[in-house]
Length: 67
Image 1: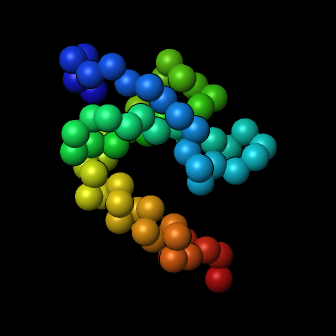
Image 2: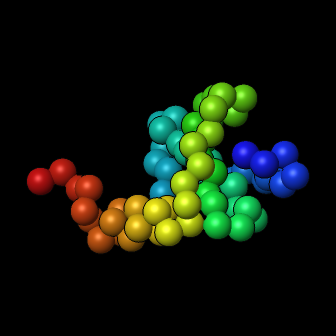
Image 3: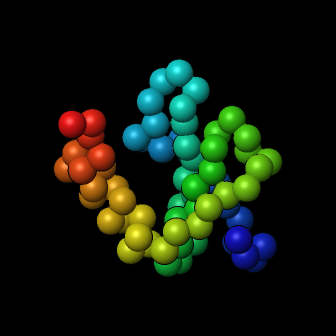
């Protein structure tokens, strides 16, 4: 991530209980950084805003639900 941006991480509202949590950082134009909340000093994945929105939409509509 660009060091020019100060990121504030928050737990994703889609994270469940039991330690299976992801954190996201808002405020970076055109990007959505995502990291494992259990490893805050570890790597973060950065998705384009469009790719992240597609993923969130797929989760909301049940595209990844077990069949």
